[in-house]
Length: 118
Image (cartoon, rainbow, N blue to C red; front, top):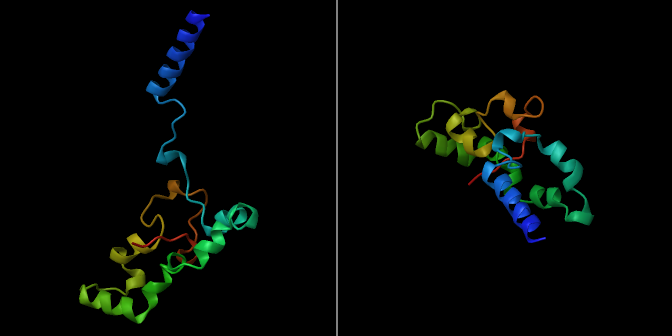
């Protein structure tokens, strides 16, 4: 009985040590807000989509089209509008600059992607 328990612990340790079952970022794909919304808008599980939609994070890309963003872009000496500048897009658009292989399908338009800004 004790020897079976030792073998079980050894097997668990081997699996954990080998990294089996551990997913990496390469295993996950960006799916876009429409796909996320299909499950995460349900009241029963907390309506995460609704909560996100009511916050400024959901409008991160749109803020780049405003007067404040234009002023900041000008102050930083950017040669293109904020909503076209990689310097701004990398923070205001989820997965900006990621290769096409990082997406489940063709990347969603910027206005439809889940966006996070800091």
